[in-house]
Length: 380
Ligand SMILES: Cc1cc2nc3c(=O)[nH]c(=O)nc-3n(C[C@H](O)[C@H](O)[C@H](O)COP(=O)(O)OP(=O)(O)OC[C@H]3O[C@@H](n4cnc5c(N)ncnc54)[C@H](O)[C@@H]3O)c2cc1C
Picture 1 (spheres, rainbow, N blue to C red):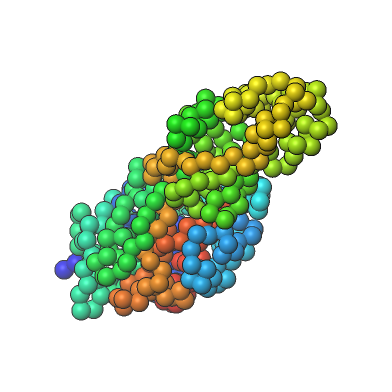
Picture 2 (spheres, rainbow, N blue to C red):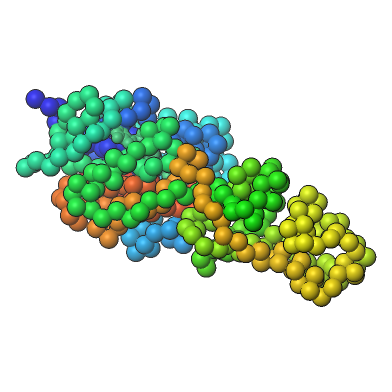
């Protein structure tokens, strides 16, 4: 006979582990996890330090239906995340980002300790899920398990090298769920031929403001050999799909007033940005690096585009480099208070497999933990 459990959690990542940790111990819980280790994505998160959460979290920090995410975000706040991980030494960085002081391993250790009573089927890749009269059958590549309730916490498609797969989407479809098309998010963008000049600036970075689909993102821009990257571009990739973005390369200054104050200087010496960038920008606008008092009105207006340079990126650098997946299981068919499917009793979806994606800054782990906490409370 197949081993049987009250609950099987598909995926021992951030959301699944948090759910397992918060469920009462008398409930028999098993994890099915493709990797040999738990919490692999947490281990690589935040450059190995894990940006665990953010001091300030609100629905505006997500690309998601706010009505769906609010009960989770309000039910399990960043303070509760901090209380849960109180043994982990943290350090605060810009914009309220809370990172592990030493290593992401400290975060996984807490989850490991808190799920020690659960059964783990590691190196078990889930290949199929079926409904039976009293629950579900979970078929892995090595065994067959049964459970009364199934929690799908299998994440998105980014970073396939550490186990990401589409299994959650396939399970959702099996039970009639709608999928919102998926795309890489929190990822660098590639550029079209007209912006190839950016590639020659690979390695240069400075703060900019980018407007995309009505959202304003601010932060460090990094030119890369494929196009543009850095925190601000990763945030833009959340909202960008096709079409133009508008970049203000100098958000803290006015080019016009700098030029008025220093008419004898050349743009490359008066604009407080890396010289290599200013020279490449002038070249792409067809302008010479000459004293600004010699610029015609039309040339001055062209230089002003430094505040509103509009271009259409070509695409993203893809799932191998993306920190998240946008799209996923449509939230209209999931109960926002319990995370249970509206279409199949006993089936739950948590974390990134859902059509909920946060900005860079600890928002995705906070969503994973918060959705897990709400679900676990409902099941307790
Ligand atoms: C490089 C990188 C850095 C990041 N840094 C941060 C950060 O600092 N802060 C932040 O908030 N977010 C960060 N994120 C995003 C964050 O890690 C995820 O949003 C979060 O882990 C999602 O949690 P989850 O539980 O939904 O999925 P995951 O944590 O991805 O867990 C899903 C689990 O399911 C398993 N699985 C998948 N398919 C199968 C299958 N067929 N059978 C069995 N098991 C399967 C996977 O192996 C995985 O362990 C980062 C992501 C990446 C890739």
